[in-house]
Amino acid sequence: LPFLAYVIFRSLEEFPEAQVLHVFRLSLLRFVFRNVSEAANEEKKLKSSNVPLSVDYEYVLYAVERKATQDYAASNMGNGHFNAINLMEFDAGMAKAREAHLNCVTEMRKFWENFGKRKKRADFSEHMVDSVERLAEFNTALDKAK
Image 1: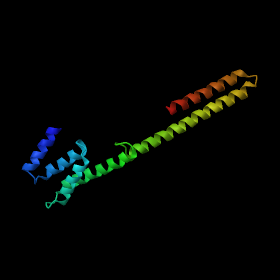
Image 2: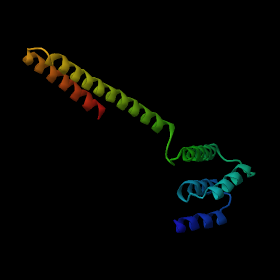
Image 3: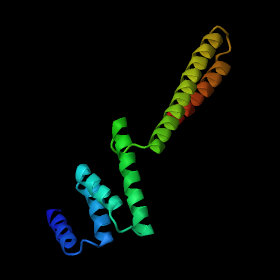
Image 4: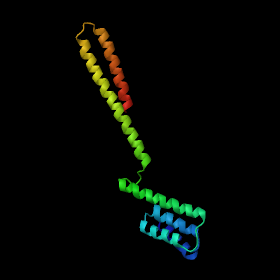
């Protein structure tokens, strides 16, 4: 990486009017070298230069700025690569796990309630079939919880 930085630096000395080199250097500073302060200075120079950027370089500059803003906002949340989609997926997964856990507990409660009611009766064969069915429902709910 130091050699790449040197090559870009030398090429900017020889061709200071090359917009593509400035945009490339900005991208490298921001995302490869993680030098935010120097990247911000480069971005200011690009925006305040007398030569207007072409539309495609303007878009690249906008995308770099947008990505940097998103990374900064995500790092404030605690994780450098955290975004709203990850948060939504996590919340959906937690809701699914809570629902499956509740179903599991409900099936367990029904099993033991049923077991207590049937135990008092004399017909144990029907009681065992019903208990095994409840146990199967519990296992199904347990599999969904995983």
